[in-house]
Length: 376
Image (cartoon, rainbow, N blue to C red; front, top):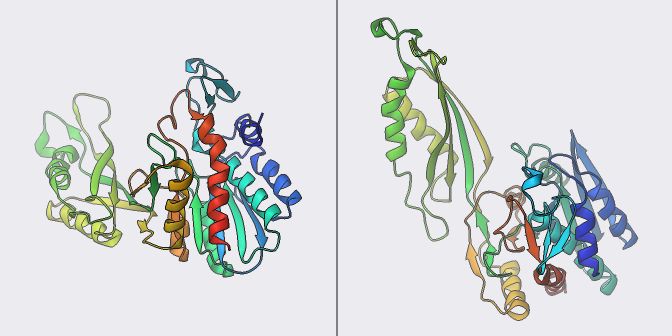
């Protein structure tokens, strides 16, 4: 078996459900320490973060990944156990194979090879890992590490995130940015009462319906050359006591904006609250900004990644900003150029998640080539 296959299988066997790292980072830190890296374990709350560096000063190239995975779902629905890596039909199956233990293993091997071949390289190469990427808050993962970096003055020039960015073929898409994510938790207050006496009550469902219709029909912006128009989606709507003869006293609505650089979080918040006020609602609204949009424009990192993919994968990569969010949103505000480059994402979070063996074998070479061209 190859080194990349062996290491990926070792990682998959560790049941590292967010935020439990299950020993993944200790395994990788031991390898990198032997390769001459300095490893700092940054634990916040229940979250493990690993910061492994080789070299000194700038420029600073960081490979960024996560060791946590989403739950497997019903294990008996898998063709093979989700935490027992299995080879079948030219693919490696297991939870995290594509998202993103294969890429984490590849980045580790690439950095080992880089340090061995270039022991006196200029600048710093680093690996940053967290066990809190797949969770709902990301409070103690890369978000917290980025605050630490800002306070300590740690610079980052380039960051390659190993998220599974490819669509159909390895390297066919590089993500050069991501939309921001802004969520709201709205409570509309009414007056509970009997359905036979609506004059003695105030139905928050009826009160909110016109405002919801307006919010759903609003065109928030037209997008721009890098991002599509902003979207507004209600994900949860709850009200009522369960009885058919009771007008409820409150309504709760959870909603989310995915937005690019054509809008700002402040402007979106203001427009929502203006709509609610105009409809005369009595409400409370709690906001959660999980990340601002970021965009990496043409620069050394983009150019090098495109060159490497042309030469090694025979593709002309598409440059995109779609999908959800990634931890790159916490690194970009530090002034770094950030891209996401990893395996095909068709099976991520699904039953029978897998990565093609050919793609897995090529990943360390891609990451190594990017490091060698940037850190000359």
